[in-house]
Length: 406
Image (cartoon, rainbow, N blue to C red; front, side, top):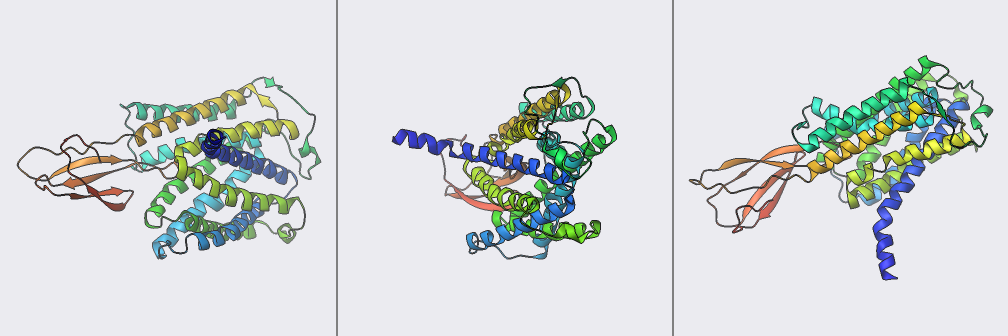
């Protein structure tokens, strides 16, 4: 019995991530139904962030009341950017893309985020390509596979593949004039561009969030700040775009369920579960479950939305998922890489030794820093290691072996 409990305890993070992906898949299905009902997408995005803010602020207040550092203008500006790229802009672009294409399409495109993050990190010189290493080649190959899959998913249709059908199509009961994305290629192309822009915005948020975490390492408080900023921005955008005030009215209907589910359950509870899994098993562990959402959305979409699968869709989604795992494998190899700090025999002069320390926060980039060590000391040394801008002193005991690492 004890062995079974230990096994179940070890499976808990994996089960949690499965639940997270199923919940996120439900958000995509609800979004598609809401768009079909004629509900304003910008108002949905605003309400989602408002509900998420109402959930995260009390959570951050009670859990990080004693450990939260003081706010300053730099942190507030970073929170504003996080709210823009990780909240309001990403949500609005994603919803518009979903309305023009399909739930399965945007779910597949979201798996491009690690590859786009890698491209941005290299462009901003936050990460080295390392093309001569296996990890570097895997990241480059994964990026190319992801881009190729996105092109195939968008521009090649192929034969229709009927795995199963229930003859149920909830979209036919909507108020809007919904058409198949393949019936209007121009709309499908615009939806593709909006999906790419959404992934790009989210990737920028990952990089900015990593910088913000250096000076403000409180995940609940930083998430609450991002939700506050994003809610203000999304509400302002919705007020400027939507002239029909009746769209803001919430009753005991489908609209309330959609925004409450996406805001409280998805952006609140599920973000907390993801944070717990990242702390237990690391960010790569949480990332490998992302394609599960694509499978769930494709399955539910075929059941109740009458979404048709085509050969191009399956091949493109497969390439994107393979590219995702290639990039994650390369990042995993880099995270295990450590350059040993080796004392250099000489005349006692200090040497600068390059230490590669990898710290990944929400699929962000590596930072390589310099450590200075004096050879002549025989007592315990204090070594300062800089990881993503923060300096953490650590005692290093003397060892008879010259090959001991940090």
